[in-house]
Length: 260
Image (cartoon, rainbow, N blue to C red; front, side, top):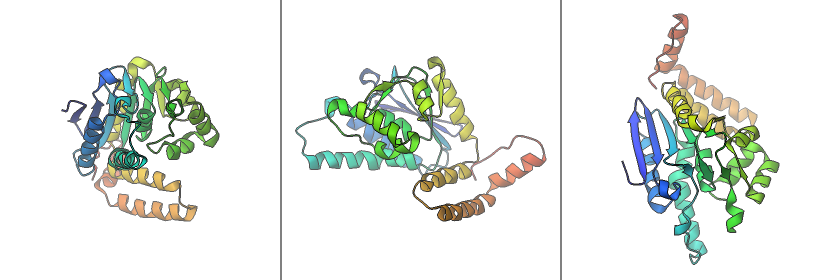
């Protein structure tokens, strides 16, 4: 438990709740540092098999905390702060060797929407307001979104969203291919938690390697990808989960995976 982040672990599912509802869960320095600490611990915690990220109150995350943005900060200092944010929070989240689900039940803007998209699966409310509003603050995009966004929606749509900074809804985000699922607003947390629990019960070694292969596939050649697939299959064939999967198939029952 923390003043800005609530942490709960049950049955292999780690729930992280951004807890600054009075500021729409905007990312201030304390919250970013706390997220970085937890993600650093999670990476090596075998008890954690999946992660669910959500927000308290009426927002998922409204982006960076404007109250902490100092226009007098030098470019060097601003760059150093950005590097710290990316290396402590966004890269660890995106590269975490465990499946991560985001529950976007309300506002998600700028770095807040980037935080959601750093997760593997995004479940959003159909009318949840979203935007990349950097241009309205005279800023360029950050948090890796210029890498992630074109790969999700294509370059033309990425330019339209970033150049205009316009708002759109969870339903529109689904239609664009930006997120995995849009559900009625009141069902977001329940649905996202169900998906996260299902992943936590899964063959997490195979899931982790699949996640890594998909990440690498965006910048590797076909031959390289085939080699990585062959290596990953060799690894997963030696796991207890693979043996359990084969046994469960033969016995016509549901597999019980342990992540080993």
